[in-house]
Picture 1: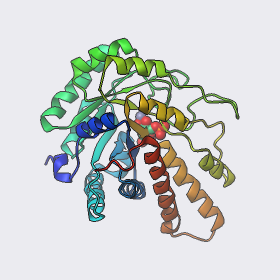
Picture 2: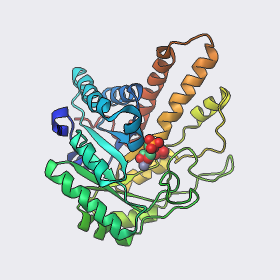
Picture 3: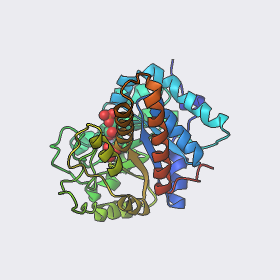
Picture 4: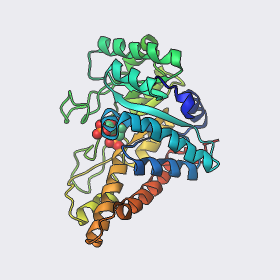
Length: 324
Ligand code: G3H
Ligand code: 13P
Ligand code: ZN
């Protein structure tokens, strides 16, 4: 039986984004795949009083089991409320690739869905996005669309290639689809290898000119930045110090994220930094405690480090203290 996000104590992104735009900060959208990540996100956002978008990819949904997730999320909301927190919490499908998947998530309590038709020809992207909006809006679920393709995970394109958003398309796309927010491509990509730079070389600036032009054409409209992990060097170093092999990683410097936020970005997607923190702490713990085999012993410290990292991100995005 279908369940509405409202029954789960969640909110859609409409008011969240309105407040973020008015007050000049961005709402964090953190991905999770398991209990420890979800606990870390919720505890961090409660502690620093930040609104939050919990994010589940198609892969996460398959990994964690959609029914289990359906019950975990209200559990996370309950933890926040028991702690006396009123922070708004949304649940988003990250990179939905079909209308059917989006519908299924809407029917299972998601409050926002992303339909990512960005690799499709423009008219097909409009069509599929419109179809999702037509199902979502009568249920009060908000929808994120995407124009322009990020290099990397959006697999139809070579990982070398960015297809930047064409600002001349954005008004037409928003008008014809009815989306509530729009992800754009300005030079970020998913994962830990976002830029090809030699060690010590500066990270090139994102295409802020494209962002500014999109914002000018869509005044007051929520813009979303994907691929926003900084690929935290201290955790990459920790991974490598304890047997890992991550070479030539590069993320988006926090100064650039802050600049994007000042130019109308009001949702910032972060996944890889959480993966790095978790992997680094677990590697270190196991290397230093070779006879330990209780998962709580290494997942506990990983969860604690994750929480601290999410608090720092909320402070960086300006969402800390804005939970109402
Ligand atoms: O945008 C991609 C997110 O980092 C999710 O990645 O599909 O491996 O869960 P995933
Ligand atoms: P990162 O890989 O930079 O964390 O980006 C995550 C993302 O955009 C999820 O949609
Ligand atoms: Zn993404």
